[in-house]
Length: 106
Image 1: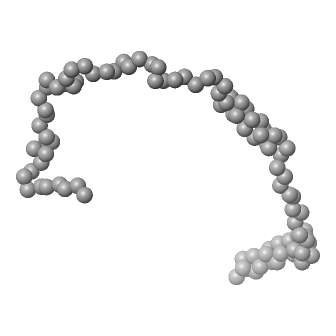
Image 2: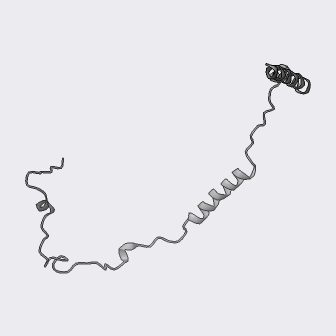
Image 3: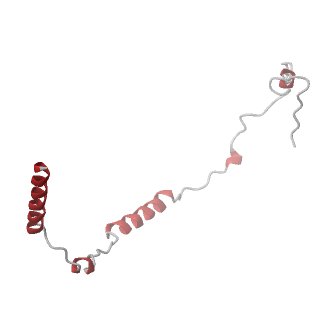
């Protein structure tokens, strides 16, 4: 029982010292609005964007005359029979499927 009394005295002493050293609660601190800072767009950002757009138009603009591709010679003309005509046609892949399975595409 003696220890319990000592503990109560220690807690009471701690409470008193906390009240002495802790700042008092003041409701006026809750009423003060926080200072708001406005977000401003940096000046260099739109200037850089405009410069990029202008440079892309300059670089992508093509002043060279158009080449007429119909004047080019034909390299891939077929003469005679089609390519790989001598080979036998491959077996259809349907032969690998079971007979009872039928696939119909819409």
